[in-house]
Image (cartoon, rainbow, N blue to C red):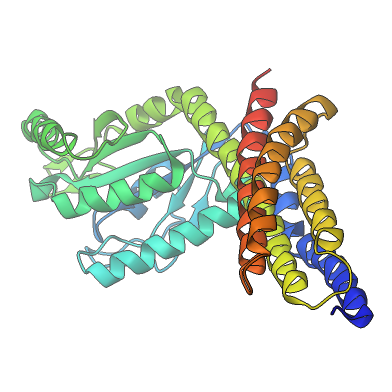
Length: 361
């Protein structure tokens, strides 16, 4: 026999579910609904092994010594952003790539956190639009480890354009050899993993003084600036798509949390020995869940009606299962839990499709 006090508890759980769901999803929806900021400049992630000349290259583009430079040693300890008024892109200096696996994973996590912060806040200084992959031309090799590292970083910004930069290109004779070597390596690597390499630039960022009469002058930086500037429209287009997809992800995260909260509450009220039928408490939970999913995806009245129609069909199927489960002790709560998950999943999938379709109109 049911007890009235459990009816009150069940109602409180339903209200608590509503409150918890809103608290849990607030940040995701705030991130999703922030406008995409416009900015004339793009951000270039400058990466490569320690000593590849990244900081020297940045200083050459800036025309002044701002980034610390070492003699083959790792100098950059954290990511720093550099820019100049007359250069149409910012440069993000990164910690040098090492071949130690744990070190690579640490840097990847830092980059991922840094990138997500930029996406969440729509902070243009923390978005990445392009990568300069710096290779020391004197090394005469490109390791698969470094390409794997580049691949994992580029995955953070799907489709991001990459410019390969051969630094310290002292010998003009070696330039075509290095570029041909890289193309061969890439032809083999691209069979396994795709990298969007848009160009190869060889350069010498700082003149090399051999003796009083022999000086190899710096060259190629202007060509790199030109190549990167030409990529700006494409880089912005790709990055905007990344940001839009991130907003979709935030909306989905919010919707999933609504389902999780509803599922938890539905299970709790069903196992209680309430006097009223379970449907009195479960139906409002489902209704609230569907309402909030529609709200998370900013559905129009027409699209919400379509989503509800699909969700109702799932609900009808599971109502039969729930009635059947009541015949067996202890199975009703499991059936309600499963039904809530199924209804929520369908509501999210349909809502996501409708939201994306509305965005494209």
